[in-house]
Length: 136
Image (cartoon, rainbow, N blue to C red; front, top):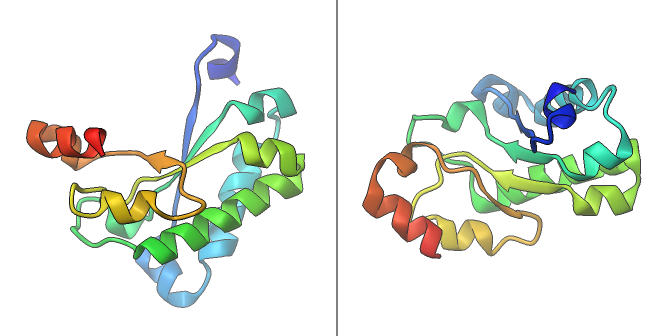
C-alpha cells in the first residue's frame, strides 16, 4: 500500500520452489501468493501493478523454465488476477518472466503469448549481455 500511496509502481515477484514444481503444487503456491499480495489492493492500483513470475529454483542456478512452462504459469497468474478483479484489469496487469533471462533465451521467451516482459537479474550485471537483452 505504501508504494501506491507514494506513486510508485510495485513489482510483485511470485514463484515456486523446485519441490513445488516437481510436486505439482505450483499453481496453488502462486495462487496463495497472489491472493495475499492483492488482499487490500484496489482495482485501480491492481491495474498498475507489475507481476514477475520468478521460479525460485531458477534464481542464480542456470536452470530455467521452458518458455512453454513460463507462458503457462503466467497465463494461470492472469486468470488468478481475473478472478479477483475481472478480465479487463487482468489484461492491463503486466506480467513478466524473471527466471534466468539471458541473451540466448530472450527471443523465445518474448515470443510467448502471455509473457509481457522480462525481469532481468544476473544478466543485468554484464553490460554486453544486458545490452543484447534490452535491444531485443
